[in-house]
Amino acid sequence: MLNKCSVFLFVPALLIASSLRAETIDVTGRGARGDGVTDNTVIIQRAVDECSEKGGGTVSVPSGIYLIRPIELKSDVNLRLEAGAVLLGSTRLADYDCAFPFEKGSMNQSSGLLFARGQNHISVTGSGIIDGQGGNRAFQFGNDADGGPKRPKIIYFAECRDVTVTGVTLRNSAYWVQHYERCEDVTIRGVKVFSRCNYNNDGLDIDAKNATISDCYIDVEDDAICFKSDHPDFCENITVTNCITASNCNAIKFGTASHGGFRNIAVSNCVVRRAAEDNIRHWSKQLEHISAEVTVISGIAIEMVDGGIIDGITVSNISMRDVQTPVFIRLGDRSRTFRKEGGVLKNIRISHIVATAESLMASSITGVETAYVENVSVTDMQVTYPGGGTYGMVSKPVPEAEKAYPENRMFGHTLPAAGFYVRHAKNICFTNVRFSALRPDERPLFFLDDVADAEVNQCNGAAPADERFIRTVCSSGIVTDGRQVIQ
Image (tube, rainbow, N blue to C red):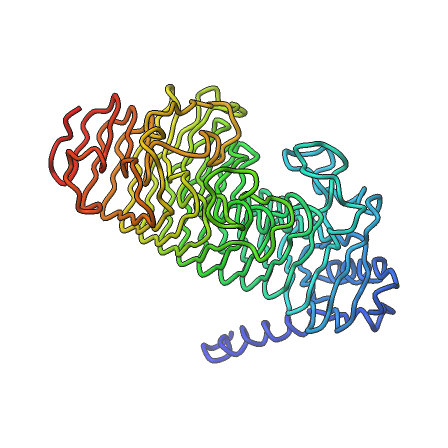
């Protein structure tokens, strides 16, 4: 019989023995050549397969430039990119034909340079680089909405458990940079992303459960951090913190794939700014009233348009510059994929936001006539905006556009409000939300249309009855600083 002391000695001994059994394979010892020309796919794939078959281990890629075709990561394997290591993706589109985690296709079907499906305990770590060479003309097919051959992602993991990606740099993707679809227990930390070479260069797309994303730097052409929901189950139980996001589209976005839904997600302590380059969008040339050459579309975009449910989202401590619209919340009715009922968008808390806006497309919270946004609070928000809005913009009709793709410009290049436009909503609360215009603006700060039970407290210190402060249409139960607003 073991005594207590021998038990305590026995457990660490098991852990040590286990770690000794975990194999580390240096791919150069198997013949890999980091010359940027030699195809190393077979050697690296064999190393991954061997590690997995033996119960787990590390495949180490030393300094050098290693040309590869798609690599399939397997259970219990850590692909470690050492300092100075670069995995360089093939530029032959045909090389990606067998790198589809979902063989029969999915909502966002594509291939991956590093891909896996149904694997457990997989990781990509180290301080090296993965370069997808997505700017190559072999991958230039325009926006995916226009059709054409599918382009590969750099990382595409589907239905995997215990996924870790830390420290690496991902650059120049042909499509989305990284996609975690129906994965569970995901950790993404300290990842740097630079990809502005092609359309649809989302920085990080996550459709997962139980995930933490932290300390990442993401500078991309399309959405920076994008929550997706392509399946009946929820994308849920996720935290995002301490990230810098730079984008030519949306910085922190929920949707548009919103078929199942999002719940129990917290985003905090992040920075939003414009991308370092704008090679495609050029919003200042496409849209009216844009006051900066390079801009982010929306700093925070929460969108439910596919019949799913958004319930329980908090966004706090965000500093944003160069944004057209600080906050865009939209409940639409584009499609109803898994539920016969329309979509649900409720229980949203946004707080401690500092924003500098560069357009006349104000922040908005909008539902449709058949489905209201419910229970949204915006607290301690400070916005500087260009101003220059006219009285004619106040009376300009705002289209319902219930089936339109959700984006800040879906209602036009201006809105009737300078601060927040709210329509088809219930139980909305603004507290200590302050706006500062660089030029005089004739629009009211708040415009509420078909809104029930809203509170506007301690906002800009204006008199509640002043139409320069708040305008209401077909709304009821509106209270500002403890006083009822008379229609």
